[in-house]
Length: 222
Ligand code: DX5
Ligand code: ZN
Image (cartoon, rainbow, N blue to C red; front, side):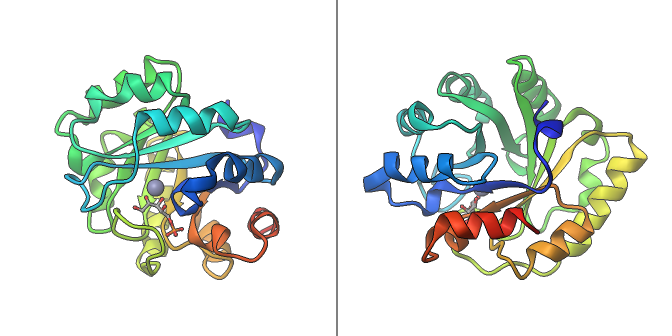
């Protein structure tokens, strides 16, 4: 299981912040680092006000990756594309609660493929909306910025939300991991881990640093 193989925290560098003209080099950098997963952000220009990349680029990333692809779908009607992203190499797929009127069905669709199913939650969405889905998911991707862009400022209310999700997980006897996505750095990461975070996504903090491998190592050592 993805949960038990890696020592915590699981570090998932976000490829969105990488140099797209040198994707192979950037993926190899993650391979050679202490990172656990590769976070892959898919944006459709409808659910979020930006377009990133899609299935062929995800396949290309997977061709070079030795670590599991953690695919974050910021798209409407994700059920149309879940299988394609699975075939492109995804080992974890998260869909947004705000984009899924039939979330339970969407989660079952992902799990039926034999991979991990995550629910992503926007900063304004109350944790109470997870009550009847938390036992079914492997991961909660808690947005600590508004989805759509890398390099944004971390929203401080995230700490309280992590604690709330952690307590819900306990109450419902869920095995879900809590992933924090957006503005993560070595200042907020220790507080996030203390609050109950299991997985840290980091884009710009890793790729804009002078030594990305060392930055990943610093996050992993927290
Ligand atoms: C935001 C994305 C994040 C982003 C994180 O819409 O979902 O995964 O790549 O990047 P940083 O760490 O730069 O905020
Ligand atoms: Zn993301």
